[in-house]
Amino acid sequence: MNAPNASGWKPEMGPAGSALPTTASGDKGLQLEEALIFELGQAGTYGVDLPEPEAAPVAGLSKFLRKAAPALPGLSEPEVVRHYTRLSRQNYAIDLGPFPLGSCTMKHNPRLNEKMARLAGFADIHPLQPKQSVAGAFEAIAELSDWLITLTGMAAVALSPKAGAHGELCGLLCIRAAIEAKGEDRPVVLVPESAHGTNPATAAFAGFRVESIPANADGRVDFDALVSRLGPDVAGVMITNPNTCGLFERDMKRISDAVHAVGGYVYCDGANFNAIVGKVRPGDLGVDAMHINLHKTFSTPHGGGGPGSGPVVLSAALAPFAPLPFVQRDDAGVAHLIEEEDAAAQGHAQSFGRMAAFHGQMGMFTRALAYILSHGNDGLRQVAEDAVLNANYILRSLEDVLDAPFAAAGPCMHEALFSDNGLAEGFTTLDVAKGLIDEGFHPMTVYFPLVVHGAMLVEPTETESKAGTDRLIASMRALAERAKAGDVTLKSAPHYTPRRRVDETLAARKPKLVWKD
Ligand SMILES: *Cc1c(COP(=O)(O)O)cnc(C)c1O
Image (tube, rainbow, N blue to C red; front, side, top):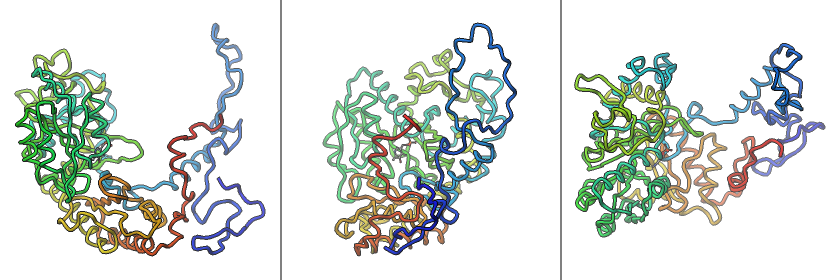
């Protein structure tokens, strides 16, 4: 942190080379500097009055007596409250403004979801309590399953995977189990080069060899290249639809038919389901397994590592291999939790096993179900339509200042993709992203997908208003113009944040995770 300057104001170079005063406190306006909690306060300060301990230690435990005081920060309650409140104000959130991270679907989270997830019957239950005492939770899970199956046109859904990537693993383990059940040897999974990094990683983790399939000039899977690689050694394909270039894979049904014709399976990465929910049923496109990021398409807060939930919808061919535990309705429509002891009797004898100790993320299920029920089928369709409209509005509003590699081929889906082509010599996508922080926005996704040089992937989602989207567009336009004109001040952006440009490589490679070594 900047040490408080005892002599008060001192000149510092401002963003445009102007002299700016700095403050004695290190704070700027209402943006407050914050030290580590260990650097605040002092040992011996407490937020509570603790009773003096009994003098004699419990017999036999004296060798465990602490020899030195624990290295805990010493702060009063108001100091602790201020510390975390100050830190929270240095953060950016979807509740502060647009969060246009492409592929992440950072949308507004309706507060109704939170209210429902906090109902005691959902929030305060334990996975080990008697099943008959949580029948209502199983009914809610089964109702969510019904919706996911209906929306995707698939045969079944496995709800235990904890996030998208975990769902990918679930789908590929189903495919592996199906292949083994047929006594076949199919070591190869084909993955398009525009895929999210988790796809090849998952295929490799599930024991397959990954082979890359090129994209064609309009940003979609090269159908001929894919078909020419199909054969008896191919377990299947992993295709993202809409893909990570923000484009619908128009050949999806043909691809599925071709893969099935050689005995393979089709995995669809459904992270971008937001663009087609209520409009397209992946089951109609021949998909055998697809994860749904509940935390993307069906709102629920995410970012910063969680929480997530990645249910996997399965075709009739893969449903028998789904993991346990599995929530399923009986003939009378009553939802039950199927576990190992009753798997065989309930049609799950071929299950590949468990992915997680318990049935999934109850809070996420409740939020997603609340979101689905409050939107209804017409509202969900409108989610997709508005998300796509907003993305196309951004694409068409910026294509004259930013290179949009696939814009000529037609409209995009839920995200607009730009490249660094045309920026002044030495100016990069990173400069535009850092400039966007000064403008008061979280940057878009950068340098992904890899098929586009210096990619900028902008996903507004349906929850941004036209006014909010116009502000984002105006900022991106101004930044694009500065980057094209070679404005050197952009190279050192951000200028108005608590920290300037940090060494991100060093931070990632050598993170300092302890206060003192
Ligand atoms: C987010 C995402 C994933 C991974 O999902 P997680 O929930 O983060 O594990 C996979 N593929 C694509 C295209 C994504 O956008």
